[in-house]
Amino acid sequence: MVRLCLAGLAFTLGLVSPAMAQPFSKSMAECAGIYAFGRDYVQSDDVVYLLEFGQAKWMNAAIIQAQGEGVSNPAAHVDAAMKAKYDEWQGRGVLVVLSEDFGDWRDYCRAFGAAQGIELNPTSR
Image (cartoon, rainbow, N blue to C red; front, side):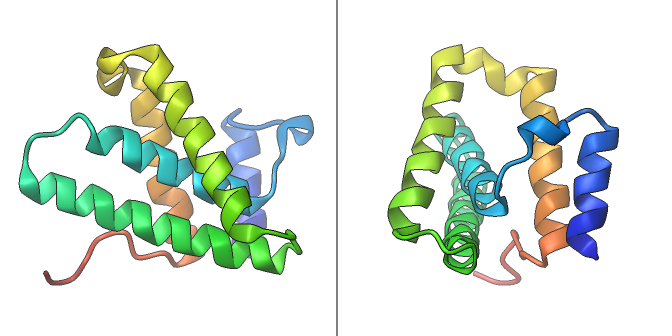
């Protein structure tokens, strides 16, 4: 039910169309790529820690999801999707972290994580 609501919300907001729908494992891996890209452009050790934690949680969730989707090599599938999204953002340049598009992706990943029950913030160090 949560997946249907999230998919409906993404469709309504125009983030995806029926033709653009993709497996959740790929979306999760792409969120890991967003976290990895953001991590490269922060100076605060606390923020670096949070982004690395979030990236690891996304990668783990994506691999588990890919297994459930029947992907033959879940780790390679997830790693490739994560790296492709990271490279896409890297190609846009450093100032993209200040863009509305990047902010929208961060918001999407947070909402997607919450809908999937993925805890992206550590409760303690």
